[in-house]
Length: 224
Image (spheres, rainbow, N blue to C red):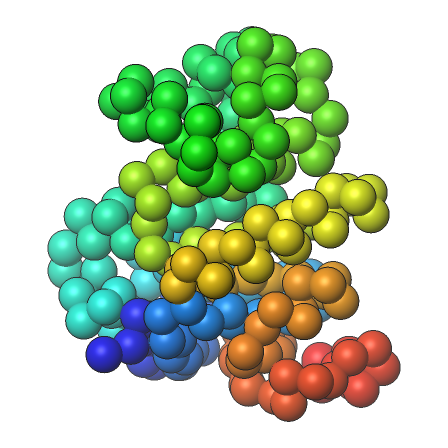
């Protein structure tokens, strides 16, 4: 049974179709990379996969469960990291985490030995989010997405506007998540993140096509 099954997914804003018959599958522990120009529908697809937007039609299953008929499936199966950090700037990092980790014992365990520890978050727990760097905010956003340890992690350009050290850190965190059999769907143009992907797709004008996962640079952008 595949972890992700998407068949003929369509979506629109008003009369404009944004997603046109999207289909893709992913196995447990696989990383799916999606590239494409701005405005091609990548963020819309990820928003649908995370349950933020409702599609016009199509099928979306996680581990054999119909997410479009039972929205609880989204909550249990997916963690979502949008381009905009979903953080409350006036609160500390710890208080932001508490909004997503209602069980204090679970939060403490994750900070001591789980992904929050791997992400380095304990070192700036008391700092207000407004005082964090872009890389720190992204780490917290990923930590929030991992609350409840969902088996699918959906990331929209996670390394955009970050420095090289932060980009490499995020790649390392994703590598560990994949090694633990998590499934990743990521939109990115970062070489380091594309190297994690077992399958690579190009999106153009709301349509998705699988391409050779080794394509890079000009060869890849020409597929746009």
